[in-house]
Length: 242
View 1: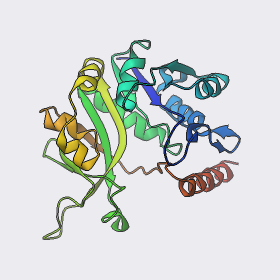
View 2: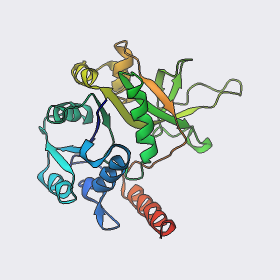
View 3: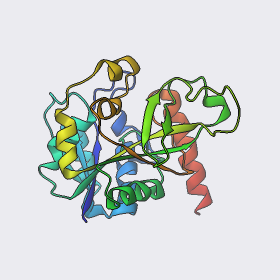
View 4: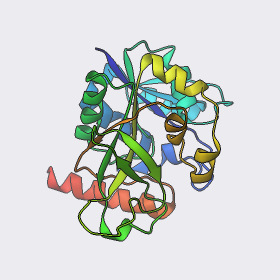
């Protein structure tokens, strides 16, 4: 089963324009993401989907493939679905271009769910105590089969009694080749618009999302402060490997 990681990257982020090209230890952020995806799946199975020539050029200079997509794509999933037409595979992983600390092991775990037959898959990790009230940390509840029941920016389940470990969602997604195209064409729903969580579209329309629980954490870069935190973490990693 051939799997490909496609990294959506656009230049015009509202809070941090140009962030895919932000310098981190001498390399653009998006290249760090490419390297981590390549460590899991092999460089030949990694591509960046972008509508910006500057991002495409940086990616190609680093030895990775860039696929130019339409600027009309409304979100990363549509961008990936369009890029997939130029990168044949049995399944696709949506690896966020603003998470340069993503663990290759997490990407491998997601790939394992697709190889196990999931049409759509994602990951979760134990929720940290200080994250319960943070709406930027998405929570997820699973059923007995490890499938998502619901995602929310609120704390779920409500801890009326202790015992159940709350889970934080990790923003990696996997799709079978067929379901990627199906999902990209599904109409948006009021539920996803209310929570601002695109994955709720799949649940609303009756599709299953398999969830793997892993111990890995990451940092999504949305602000200059996030970028500084990631830079410090990468510096720590570099010192540990010297």
